[in-house]
Every structure is written in structure tokens, then in C-alpha cells.
Length: 110
Image (cartoon, rainbow, N blue to C red; front, side, top):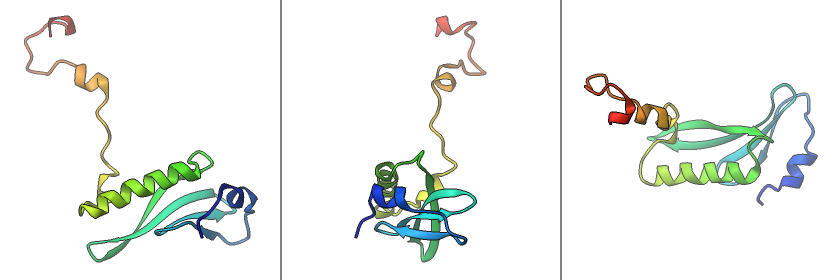
């Protein structure tokens, strides 16, 4: 049975952390010290991995499910989602900055 937002809001921290399972290896860890954290347990290349999807309520149930679905799509094409954690999108500033070997004196000349 899939997890609901009402179940999450009603969950109370206990002395020990516990899990509220959703589906496909995704669950919410309810912890007394660090709050509620989304996790996803999966296997890649024969090894079990545990990926953090974010902290509830900053990451809603719907958003956690989107991230989980995106990760499952990567697994389907044999890409480890954890391998992409260090990847960051290139900012517009970096793209628009002139190259070091550019002979231009200003951005306007590009």
C-alpha cells in the first residue's frame, strides 16, 4: 500500500528511527534528531545502495516520488543514479563567460 501525505503528517518521532515505506524501495525515515528523510534503497552492479532524496517537508511526497522515478529510469538504462550526484548543471554565468584564450575584450564582442 502506498504512503499518503496524511500518514506522514501523523507520524511522530519515537526514541528510535523508523521507516514509513512507499514503494519500489523508497521510504521515509522518521528520526527524533534529524527529522524526516527520504531514502531510496536499490541495487546496481550487484551492490546495494542507499540514496538520499531529500528532507521532508522541503521535499514533498510527490517530489520524492518524482526523484525516485527519475532514478529508476536511469537504472533502466544501466546508469547508477548515485554516480550523478556530483554532477551539477552548468550555470548561465559560466556559459556566457569568455574563454581564457579568447581575444575578445568584452562580452559584447562575443
